[in-house]
Length: 151
Image (cartoon, rainbow, N blue to C red; front, side):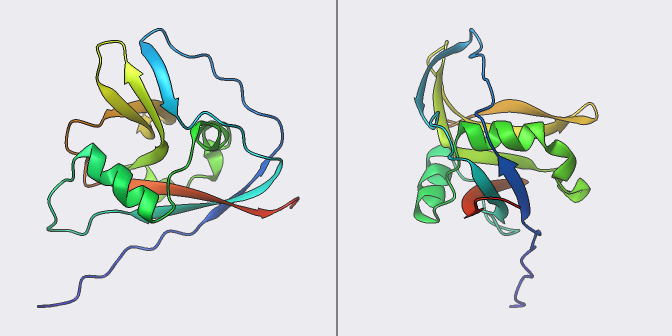
C-alpha cells in the first residue's frame, strides 16, 4: 500500500500583549475550560491535521483526546488573537476548520461544543463544533507555544 503524503503547513508567529475582549454570546450556557489568558510574548501557531484520507470522521470527544495527547489544545485567547490577526492565516487554509480543542463550552440547549475558526463570507469567523457529532475531515488542530518575549 502506498504511503500517503501528510500535508505540512508553515507555522505563523503572533505577538501577544493584552487579552482580547470576549463578550460571551447568550447561547453559551457556560465555558467549561479554555478561557485563561496567555502571557505576553510571541507565540508560534502550528496547524496539525488530525485525519488522514480514508480515516473515518472522528467524534468530537476523540478529537479532544487526540489534541490533549498531542498538546494541541489551544484556548480562547489563542483563537481570539488569531482572529484579530487573520491576515496572517495562509490562504490555502480557507477550506479548513481551525479547531481550538482547548475550549469547551455548554450550549444553551445542553450540547457540548469546541471552538473553531471557519472561513465564511471573505473573513474568518468564530464558530462552535458540536462534540456529539463527527468532526469534518478538513479540520486542523491548532497548537500554540510561546516562542519568545518579542519579535
